Length: 112
Image 1 (tube, helix red, strand yellow):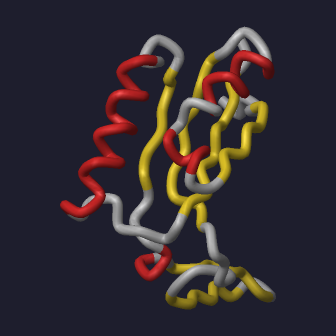
Image 2 (cartoon, one colour; image 1 turned 45 degrees about the horizontal axis):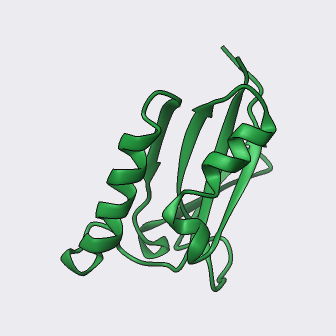
Image 3 (cartoon, helix red, strand yellow; image 1 turned 180 degrees about the vertical axis):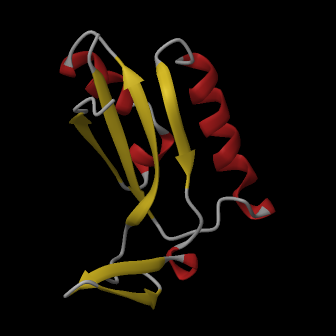
């Protein structure tokens, strides 16, 4: 069965903080409701914790923070196993982040 990445873009918040408890509870409920098709996923810490890595002429160059500043950031993802794109889109529409940002759904190319 094909797999799809549901890539969540939402405000740049620290989802581990107590003030986000209501939203994280919604994510937990969502995860329980579709547990049979979830193959992986995680929330991400805010972009202030990011390190951007580039290799230029064989030299590794790092910089603190995100690659670009935007209103919505990559805040997490799920990996679903669904029968087709229509099912993946229907499930992604139920992700709480879809109501406060956007969820991008992409088919996954197996690499292993």
